[in-house]
Image (cartoon, rainbow, N blue to C red):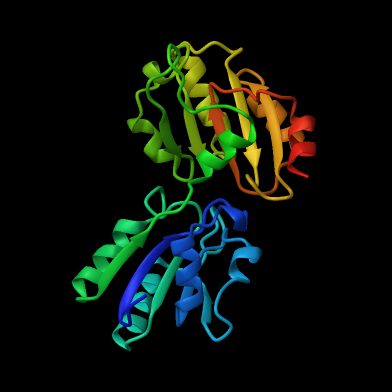
Length: 248
């Protein structure tokens, strides 16, 4: 890392074994680390002992630090000549508000670099023994965010409701009923497989396998409390209980 430069890094889905070597080096070199709420404690434990740690996490529908304050802190630390690491969960380029923070640094004349990480969808689909794409089934996959339901109005629900389509919905627990209704309204088969992976790659990982028709009821009964990624169109290759045993 270089002094006065902000590095935007992805910590992956939580398992420290999935951390890239570049991000590990950055953790051990940074003077100050601004980290998100979903970055695991195991990964934060790898930071340099003298690094200043700042929790700037956001919680959907909960307490959050204002985005402008995060941007201001990044710029202020870099202008003091510090090595600044902005650590995000997953990959910083996917639903990580990266552009807003890059633009703030650019406007202040602060240099930046991006260190990619493994996105949660990759870890979650591996956890259920599946592939995001399959020849003869789907040649594309959609990444959607359920954090802001207003953004769902822009999606092509008719196409997404077609047989064989696959989507990965980030932060989709609270919007599950909305997604379910839209897909059924546009002709999706109620038997379409839906899988939720809670705490993907972590020791408390949990897999909920259901169908589009049963999604809301099964999700409410499961009582998932951790961050979960929802796959539309994918079922686990093995039974969820077996998957949990393999992880342990």
